[in-house]
Image: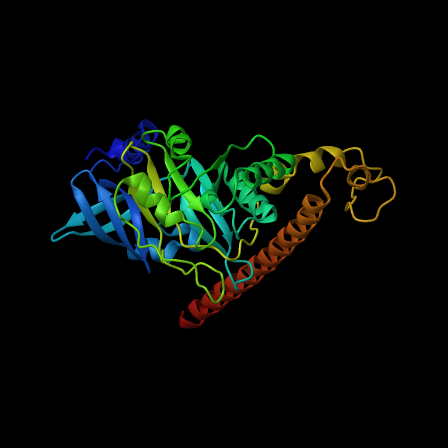
Amino acid sequence: MRLEDIGYTFKLEKFRMDNGLSSFEVGRVIAEHKERYIIRTAIGEFEAEITGNLRFTAKSREDFPAVGDWVALTTYEPGFAIIHRIFPRSSIIKRQAVGQYGEVQIIAVNIDYAFLVQAVDRDFNINRLERYLTICNSSKVSPIIILSKTDLINRHQISEIIENIKTRIKNVPVIAISNETQDGYDAINATIEKGKTYCMLGSSGVGKSTLLNNLSGNSIMRTDTISRSTNKGRHITSHRELIILENGGILVDNPGMREVGIADSNGGLEITFDMILSLSENCRFKDCTHTNEVGCSVLDAVEKGEIDGASYENYLKMQKEKAHFESTLAEKRKKEKSFGKMLKDYNKRDIKQKK
């Protein structure tokens, strides 16, 4: 297999040569299992670990390899390798880590397009779609909305759902599919380009694994039915994995996400709710919160029906989450800086005493 078949580009090769990495093997992380990585290279697949130096210098989880990363590695027999360097990333899809304030969880890296998958029978929620969109916009990843399980409702209901989406979400493709009949698969296949990397974001039980199996032509991921007692999907996909599709596209499957916490630092929220951002420039006060101020153009637009009320409420909720995440992150960095200074001062005193 050629590296180009799994997304290697001239830009990556230039980085390799410019940084003196020509003596190393190059590969892409296709799976991760508790800091053990499966790397696909031109000469085969290897199980790998990172060097002690990479581990020591890592400041956060983002400094560790993730599914989709390109890495420089040394290979050994039998099938083992050591990762020495992570190549620059073109994109990082991440969310706020569940139950860990101020921490982020990387979903996938070097992604070109994200399939936002929701089942029309039970999982459909435009607020959640706007959350996924914010994650994509923050990561500079192009979103494509996939509505699954369309065989469970009638065509009129499908059209109504699509119309509701387009009322709130502009300029994002919407594809309705059935994994049972494969209706809509032609439209999905038409969006998949050879050498481009895609990922799937969605809750458990919406049909992501079945979609992946059908697109790949193989039963790669185990699938299961919805739990009858909870009407929720069982977590079948337990890890992230990168798979080559029949038409040459590259797809990362992810575990289902019940929580989609916002960890936006690149203006994703403003892109998702661009109409609110645009109107806010006309507010009477520059620091308008768009909640109760006199002369607020956003509130005026909501009252007139120019902005969907539910979308507005969703924006406020995510804006509050973003502010909380940023303040928590700032506080965490402040504590780390103080601890680092204290440790540095302690080491200086220790050296003086030894002299």
